[in-house]
Image 1 (cartoon, rainbow, N blue to C red):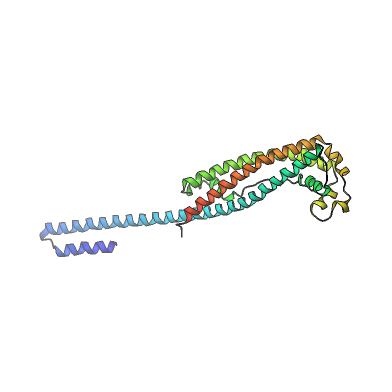
Image 2 (tube, rainbow, N blue to C red):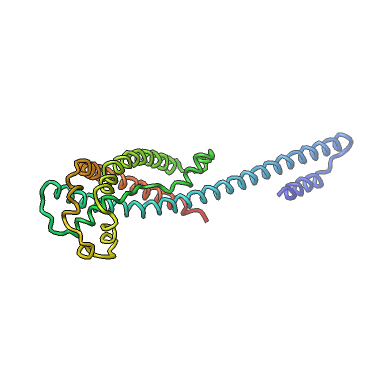
Length: 260
C-alpha cells in the first residue's frame, strides 16, 4: 500500500515539474512531506495489524478457557443429577427408619438392612471449577469479554461456597450421629454383603433383633432427623447450581458461535 501511494506521489511530481531553485525546493519539500506521510501511514498500519494479532491471540485464549469451563460444568451437571436422585432416595430410606423407630411394623428385613447401610453413605458435591479458579487466581478473569458470562460465573462461585459450608456442617453431624452409632451398635460386616447384593438376609441370618440397640439409640434417631433435613435443603441447592451451570453453558455456546 505504501508503494502505491509513493507511485502516485512520484507521478504527480513528474507531471508537474517545478521551475528554478524555488521549484526544486518545493519539489524536495513535497518529497520530504510525502515520505513522512508514508512512514506515518506505515506505522499506523503496523500498529493496527499488531493490535489485531494481540486481539486475536487473546480471543483464542478466551475461547480455550470458555470451552474448558463448559467441560467442567457438564461434569458438574452429571454429578448433580446423580446426587439429586441420591438425596431423594436417602430421604425416603431415612424417613422409613425413623418411622420404624417410632413404632411402624417391619415387614421387609432386606429393605431395612439396605436403609441402615444406605444411611452410612456419605456424599458431597465438589465442583469441577479448576478452570475458573485458574482464571481468577491468575488475574486473567478479564479475558472473558462477555460480562454476563463473567457475572454468572462469579455468582456460581458464591453458591459453591454456600454449598461447601453446608457440606462441612453435615459432615460433622453425619460422623457423630450416624456413623458412630451404626459402627458401635451393629455388625456392619454382616450388613454390607446384603446391601451390595452378594447375599441375602436369610443367608446372613439377619433379624430385627440385630437392629435393636441401634433403634434404641436416641443419637441415631436424631441423626436421621438431621440427615433428612439436610437432604431436603441440599436438593434445591443442587438444582440451583445445575440450573445456573446450564445457563452458563448456553451463554458460552452462543458466544462461541462466531468463532472459527
